[in-house]
Image 1 (tube, rainbow, N blue to C red):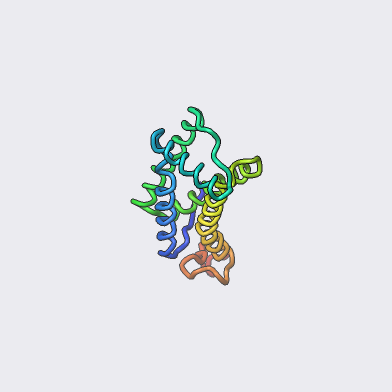
Image 2 (cartoon, rainbow, N blue to C red; image 1 turned 90 degrees about the horizontal axis):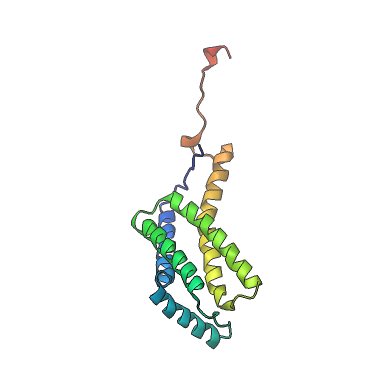
Length: 162
């Protein structure tokens, strides 16, 4: 069993909750076919006006995948808003790494550049949620940086004969 040791900073939970609120605001419109039609139109208009490219025409399969993504992300975000835990930040960072990878792939293969701002936010929240875990793990692995409470315990005393 893998034991995850969380970063000790309470401010970390504020980051986990902030990333959840961002997800709710950005993805709630993707959760139903009717709201996705509005979001799709807005992204196409915005991308066209800024010269970033319009979204491809909507079709039933694209709408299905948008709704699936929106529904899952809304539920995941609600969990992190209602009950943020450090491990939620770790898993959210992993999900953002995956999602940013697929956004980069889409951008490299001709997707509208209107995705760039979303890609930047995905990477930023991923890094902000992952770096404390990396630092904390490194500190635990380095004896001189390890907190006193995390020092290994002796399992035997000097009179043990070992």
